[in-house]
Length: 103
Image (tube, rainbow, N blue to C red; front, side):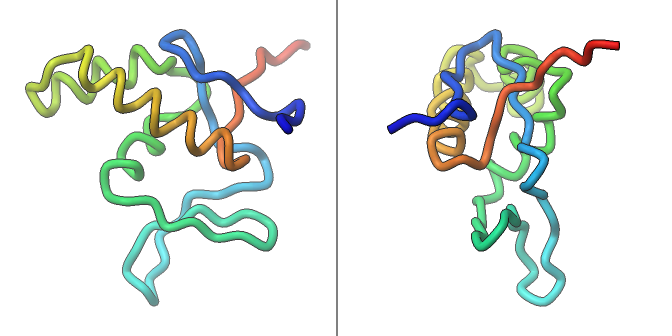
């Protein structure tokens, strides 16, 4: 059952970690983790790189463009992989959509 915070990730989405979650480097374990209340997720190296680009300003297309240029890889393949990965995190409650700030 999807709650209101669940998003459907697309190329136009501007994903960001929700307020209750933090991407943090764990010095003890020497690994990146997403810390959320009563939950910890250790994303792989590629997921960490993608998440570091998910600042709520860039959309999924921008993130894919950046990664395709960095790794000289086909943009469509990167875009497809990024959408699947981010959708999985969103479904688990570790990702939300950036909202426009209203003054």
